[in-house]
Length: 70
Image 1 (tube, rainbow, N blue to C red):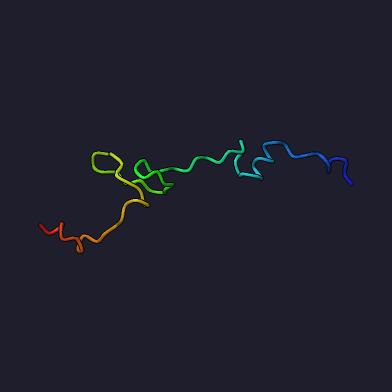
Image 2 (cartoon, helix red, strand yellow; image 1 turned 180 degrees about the vertical axis):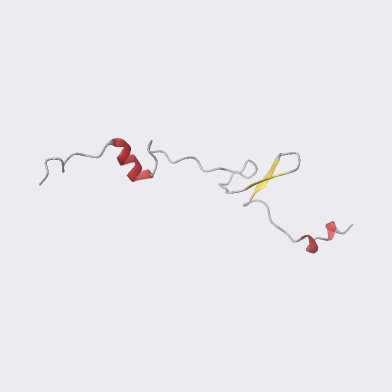
């Protein structure tokens, strides 16, 4: 048996094994400023204001919207 077998790993290595991050804290996941849910995509209007995310905005075909044919 090696004399080094009983040595624990460095705390950074332990944190990386446990969480995948060197400081032991997971990085915050982005959240939608409108609905507050975790999301991957934020949609902005032409004025650059956020209008929602991939969770709170539905994609609808314009051909099915009577409002588009005024």
